[in-house]
Every structure is written in C-alpha cells, then in structure tokens.
Length: 84
View 1 (cartoon, one colour):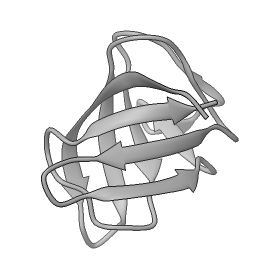
View 2 (cartoon, one colour):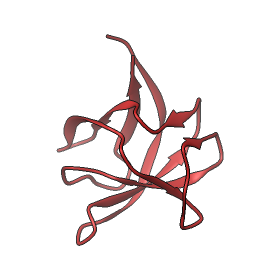
View 3 (cartoon, rainbow, N blue to C red):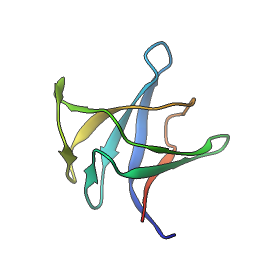
View 4 (cartoon, rainbow, N blue to C red):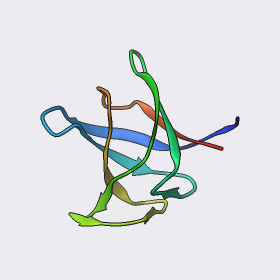
C-alpha cells in the first residue's frame, strides 16, 4: 500500500467526532481509505461522510476545508493521507 499526504487537521470536534481537514494536495473522495497520523494519533478508516460549507460533498480539492466524520480522537496538525 502507498500513502499520499492530502492535508492536515485544523480542528477536532470531540463531541461530534468530526475533524476539519485543510486539503493541500490531491483530492479526497467518499469511500477513500484514509490514514490519520500525529504525535499520538495513528489510525486508518474508510471515509464515509464529508461536508464542505455545511453541505454533503463527494470530493474535496486543494484549498477546501472539509469536515469529515472520524472514528478515533485526532488533534490539530495531525497529517491526513489517502491510502492506495
């Protein structure tokens, strides 16, 4: 498996289990396998839910700040990778 960094987490909403991700490189699609890695975070999951400007979206591109539902705790500045 290969990984490509697509962005960083800019905020994590603990009560919602949602992270805001700033997409810096490449595209993120619903159904992608993502890897979140940081100082204390290290998990993989399938991306099932994503919002842009409070509306559901299937794809995020560089410059987008999207909210994604995640299964585990993440922190600001954690890296987000797409796993192929």
